[in-house]
Image 1 (tube, one colour):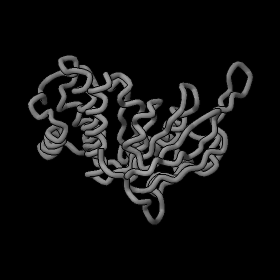
Image 2 (image 1 turned 180 degrees about the vertical axis):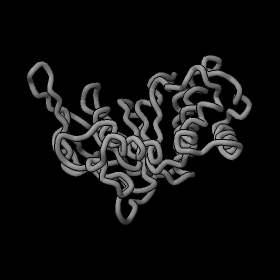
Image 3 (image 1 turned 90 degrees about the vertical axis):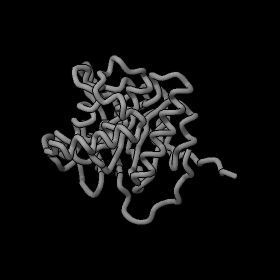
Length: 240
């Protein structure tokens, strides 16, 4: 895996300020996050650790603008997501965020190339130039020869590589990965992590990865632990 970066200087790409999130359930209020604040710089890889139900996925939904906080502000790439309408957040997400999921979330009726083309088409980029961009991205993940295949003909590791290509093809400012190795065996998971680490750093993108796997810490510049709805940053071991 790549060496960690020195802390960046200047305004962070991602900033959460006093973010809390509560839900109403059966007439009662359930608090999921409590006054969470964090800053992740441009080009950094941040990992969120925590048990199932600790609030990691809720935090990811707030960062992406899928959900809005009950209190506090979420800033991504200079944009205050909490001040945007639902439609504005959707458009921002299409342009500026790339997603990688545990279960790949590829469209089964589309070919590999067509899946990778989706973010470009959603942003109004089509035609031969878009196909060239998508094909080049598939080559980056080692699947140039599978462009006409359908997802069900690929292994889990290959499907996740297609998902990585799809997440990066439109050059998003922020990449969000939710348990990207959770559906893979250990060896395949390590290969996918190494690829994701290389491509993210190569493109100088910022990534936030949610996981319950401590071994992922090795690729992180920053490590945050979510527990009982609160966030704390862990000190990273010194590399010798």
